[in-house]
Image (cartoon, rainbow, N blue to C red; front, side):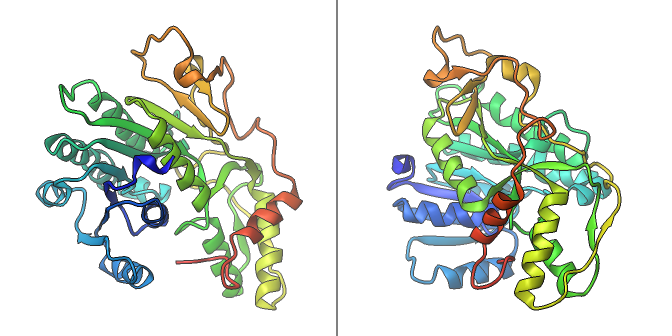
Length: 341
């Protein structure tokens, strides 16, 4: 699986974010010749540089994917691009929709253009289940980002560059996700906010998500989308476990959980693929692959099993029991903390 990055020059946009940092770590462990970490946050770059102080083959590049000229300078001679830079928070994108367009849509096109200009080997875009039948600005912009990446495979001409997307749900313990938010509420003595007791989500840990991102990169034939299998969780169950675990860890009484309602742009449930996508998707075990619509192979794509009409929706998927949620939450604890920067 790691052959795709071994001895390659890798660039990670959004390389100081939760997913980006783990991509960097796994690429270094996988023998990448050089990893270029491209992000706009100098503070996070400084933090990560201290973590990776013994790694000589890391380059930190300040820049924004919106800045076309800077991005081109950064991408010269790059083999593999993991495009993780994005505005990801639903309320922020709802309140600032064109900012989401500039980063998630125009920024993605800038990445595509630079990769084609320098004849990169592969571009892997990190997407989200919120791009499936979106009802939020963030989801809509990520859907457009997916379409831009997949269509680029059609007009690449004779260049060797292949484009693929990887789509997954919520990532436990990522910046701004439910664990650090709940932990902050508990430690400040506030009641924990439950947006809607009916809400469900797909969840995955950061290392597992990135492991499967790299696997998808190694399998891709271009113009395709890979969906990472992940368990569904009732948010009410997850919050109950988090309150108990984090309060016990902090040595304080667990606070109450206050019911509310979904915020603007939030769905009650998420889906991993649409019904149309399911008709051509194939099951690869831990991954589901959606080949390009123009793919006309006589056998199932990559030897997978046709998915058929199944729609992977968090409202219909089997839910993790409380014991498994507790095991999952405890597995991501680090140094006695559930929120790790």
